[in-house]
Image (cartoon, rainbow, N blue to C red):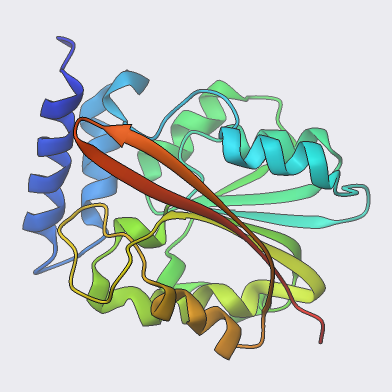
Length: 226
């Protein structure tokens, strides 16, 4: 496949996401992975290594993985899931894209991670309260704003008592409807996690430049003390 410039890939994603919103807002993920034809360079969020914000958190938090369960939402090509497995967690990682999950299994054929095709909006209720650590990295922001409340309602119940949820996402300063994808989250939207019983214990802000635009991202650590 000819190498595409990042701008072209972003425009492709925007077109796919916009076209799928009317029928199935999550359908474009599998199309993107399929059309990449094994070229990770066509997947803008694929780093082929642990996300740096997650790795930094693992380094200073040093979570004890042995005997613990972890879940990676929208696992993509699997690098974050593998990082948790190396710490001893019993890891479940899912993505709505069958092509992404097949790619994970091809990359990590001997992995202990349980890679699954699953829909965040239709998860098994047996997963509720099951995971000591839940990783949500940039999945919510990839879905339209009108789905946001529903998505957060699906994530919060997955955290076990005394467990943690780590959210990494772009943010925006007001509640105006953002252009996307991605669609950055507002503080009001993030507050829904608190309303659902989680406590915010740490928030780290990251700034990066994209042309003349400053991108604000956060890594928020929540815990469930119930």
